[in-house]
Length: 99
Image (cartoon, rainbow, N blue to C red; front, side, top):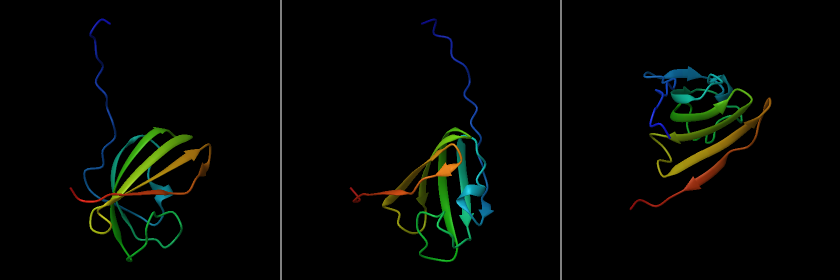
């Protein structure tokens, strides 16, 4: 190739945003830090009333992948789910062992 590169500009939420549903995260690719205060099925895990989540979102509004990790609970787990058209599908949990 020509070696030319474009600057990738990805939305980044430097502070936390409080949401009552994971579907309230903006529908664009980016890195988000959210405090989840809801009790609906949108959260990967609901072990306490409020959770801090680091969320990486990849794709476009109708085709998204969310990768989420809870910084305070379940640190050894990563959750992934996908959105196709207007439907969010269930979370998949990956659990690891500290090395």
